[in-house]
Amino acid sequence: MSIIDYKCDQLLEDVASLKINNKHEEVRIEESIFEKFEFPLKFMEHLKEFENYCDTNKDHVPVIIQELSEIGGFNYKIMSRRLLEKLISNVVAMNFSWIGFKNKENFSVMNVANIVSLRRRHIIAADVENVVELWLVKAKERETKK
Image 1 (spheres, one colour):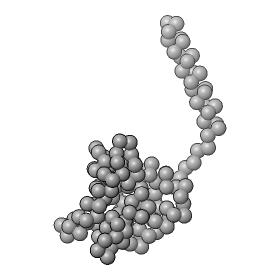
Image 2 (cartoon, one colour; image 1 turned 60 degrees about the vertical axis):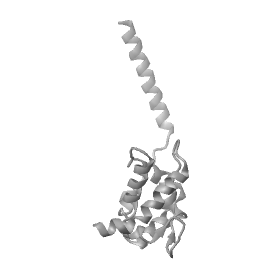
Image 3 (cartoon, one colour; image 1 turned 90 degrees about the horizontal axis):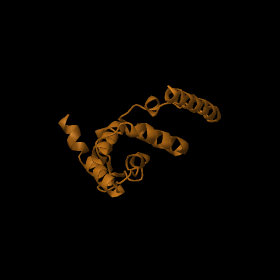
Image 4 (cartoon, one colour; image 1 turned 135 degrees about the vertical axis):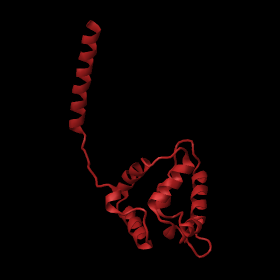
């Protein structure tokens, strides 16, 4: 019985400590990025609005990254593809190549690219970039298959 009493006392102390710590933390409730923009972005104008939002609200980018990281994936390839599919449409993707070859726009300098290519543990940035490059190349093929 004394072990149970000890555990209960310890639990009460932990709860009291959490209550004290929570009083000092400011809770920020921010609007979801999915409420601000309609994803996947279907038009270049919408992508430019999103890019502008990221440029003017640099402090929100970590929140965006955190929110998008919940999309998840089994490995970096699947996660990168899922993020791209969630963020931009094939029609928009057809306007880009990774570094802007063939009269296309440079995707690598975009905030969207930085969000998708964000370095994760044990993953080399070049590996994610290769996934993004291939995904952009195949955009037209995916769109025509619809």
